[in-house]
Structures are given as structure tokens and as C-alpha cells.
Image (cartoon, rainbow, N blue to C red; front, side, top):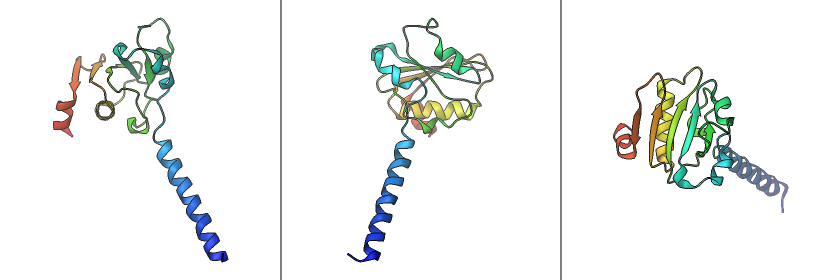
Length: 139
């Protein structure tokens, strides 16, 4: 095998590994996402957002019968693989709220990834239930 062929193969393997890493890095669970499978699907899911979301998501006494995950403040929701297939989802805000567009983007991600519906429960917005057909019209 020539040096050029060996170099091309090595570069191709490196390129493939980099592409694989990029793809997988986009598919990480959100914080506390690994704990969701300990709960029945019927329990639903709470996504904590806002500058103080971490404190509430860590709470073992606040709505103890539902799993909780965090959208880290100001992060793009599409960075995560949300464990929502077949689950109803409630988004709750704590501290400084996320901006409206990020909440819309989060809702779209959750529905695209399999949530049954998304319910906004935040003091700055009216309680709002968003279902997949509604988001498909918006997108």
C-alpha cells in the first residue's frame, strides 16, 4: 500500500470518527435525563427552565411522583435528546425566565421527539397546552 493510500484511509477514518462524535454529541440527554426511565411513562415529565431550574429539578419532595429534567439556562433545546416518547410534559419556570422563542423551540423539540402534549406552567405566561397538530401548523 502506498503512503498516499494509507494517509487517505487514516484521514477518512479520522473524518468518520469526528462526524460520529458530532452526531452523538447532539444526542445527549438533558441533565437528570438518565433518571427518567425509573418512572412509569404515565408519570409524564417536568422540564425545569429558567435561571434557578437546577435547584427545583434536584428537589426530591417537589412533585416527587414525576421525573424532572433541566434545560440549562440560555441553551438551545435541540442540543438534547429529550426522553419524552409517549409522555405528557409540563414546562415550569424558576428564577429569571427563558425568552419566549426558546420556550417555543423547546416545545417544538419535545413534540417532534415524541411528547404527547406540552403544558406551560409559568408565572409570566398563561397556562397553555400545546399539542402536535398545533405545532405542525406553526412550523
